[in-house]
Image (cartoon, rainbow, N blue to C red; front, top):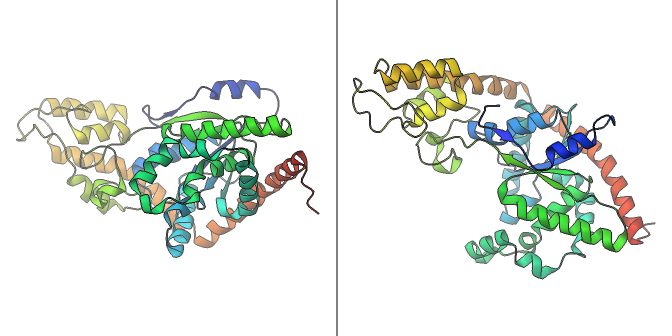
Length: 353
């Protein structure tokens, strides 16, 4: 993890201290969108943080395929993206022996049952005032479905099903987590102290710049603007060669501006190139002893040092291997989920014969 990529939150130290000497780790959960292909921005922006957290928490990570249904993906695309996402995250360092990785829909019976119970304590009016719901409803007025308005309740079910004390979230999800805390509190007031109120572990991950220089790296800007974790060395070199560098350096003989603000390529070096080499590049650039072409070659080598090991690990992981690891994760998760469902039913007075 680079110095710019860190995960911190108001609860992380508190929970670690509370479990010191008890022999068990605090529970953490995080959802992963089934997006298929990953780029280096995703790796440093999310995946690497999850890998680090599995060493310190009883971590559960799920691929959120049920959540994705609000946008009606094609079934074949969704299945492919789920498997592809699992392969990516396993190749990136998630270890089934250190964390529990599963697909959300593989626990649909437990998650959707709890979602139904939790929906009974969450007023509809409050859900319709959630800023993210209002924004999406305004943007897509022809697709305002119940799943969209009930999204925070389903997210609460994902979390509370495992009584997770900690949830890794981005800033955009904090309002949803607060709803989950509210639901837990209301449920406990009605039925007894069943759920902990989950606390955020805020993801302050690095924002890797686009090769185009326009904002952060994103697949929505086209394949030439990002380095895919499936790109081979030739593709990495070709994309990097076309990356925006120092717009004010017109000629090779001119001194460059090797700062994050002055040169997009040097900004990328700050994430992927070691400090000693980076300082050498800056010195050579300032004295015009290196041009942008050579600077980009050096960046391509640094990027390939990240991408190539990942690509090779992914290629060794077959679809059959991936599905088997997801089944193992499902079984681990289901065992504890069913215990919580039984406790919830008993608390609510439901007699399931």
